[in-house]
Image (tube, rainbow, N blue to C red):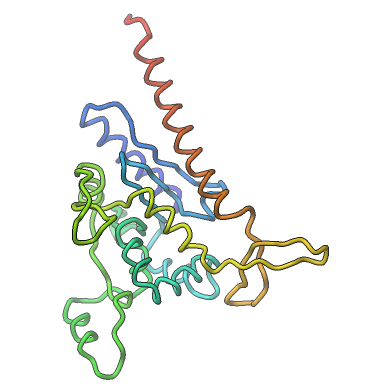
Length: 253
């Protein structure tokens, strides 16, 4: 199946869980297939109460390593290298940026995005690498947790909003990040952007390809990107509220 099939499957599963709980659809899940957000965020960017998260879907786990390689997606390659060097951004990514892919039975599995490019390993292999004197250990060289859809949904949609005292700014339980952390993470995703002047003396924001070294322009600015995201969330919630009101006002036949 295509990546879009798994994205649509995710939305079907999510809608089923919302309906099963018997509450009106209140979550704002942006399906970014074939639009500008797809290239800049991922396949899904969601607002669930006060929690936010991003998901990138792949047909299989091996495709994540291709995506962050120098020959893959330019912004993902830069992001992955940044996450390897910035522990604070890694902590946000671990809670709010996920990779989803299908197992051999075409069931969706979820992992922290930054851990998806590493090869699958047993616990014994992970421990051996940590204590190896030959190769320096890095947490992104090991798999993190893996969950199915039900586990992922429960962790991100059915928990409270209390923040943790030990790690300020993060939720005490479950997955997802605050809007403040989402905005910080967007800055993290595009910390590699540079501004250069074209032949006309105009400033252009963009990034150099790790593979070719060529400069690739980035449409707009980070501030505009964040503003667009806020607006899309508000438009979606407004649309859902209008739809709910329209359905409640229809006469029963």
